[in-house]
Length: 197
Image 1 (cartoon, rainbow, N blue to C red):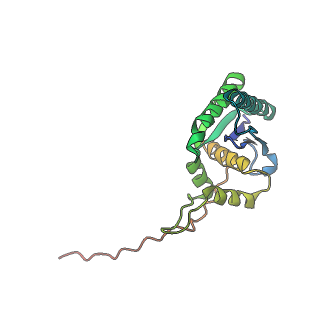
Image 2: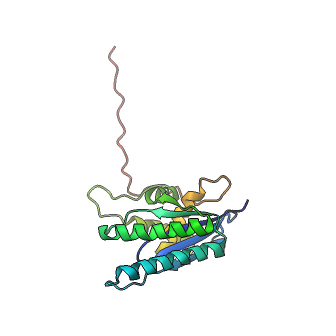
Image 3: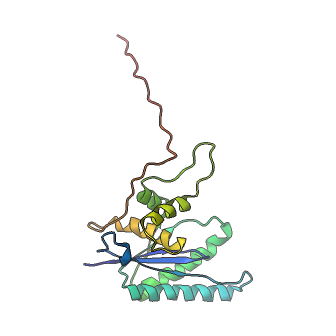
């Protein structure tokens, strides 16, 4: 059976979506993408915020139906801004309800770090005492080297999540770069110890 995987990167600044058919075989021209923005003023009332979140959830559902999604997942990560946790959870809840109730799609979380590590072959880290590493930038740059399909980082993040989810299903093509970690520190070789006679 041909599946269509829906990947989501849900955030309050931009919501990225991708749809990847199970028979895509690494052909990025078969990947569909879309982005939605929250577009709310800073002083938006709670009612305005909820109405916009409901509208976004509806837009996600409409797009999922249009692309024929049969499996759904979203990038599971905590926002850097602690004040975004509750609104983000609310938005995700609206989206999950809309997909489950209207499409019978039950979106699964995909751990952000696991998905990035699966795609790259390593999780970008800084060298001891070195500068901070922007993991998102490292992953996006690697994906951009493969394709120019994605216009926004949210779409790239959605693809990285769905790529990891697709790996669970036999026969579905996934991208694993297996790149060496440029910041890996080689462990010193231990000298063999002589045994006492």
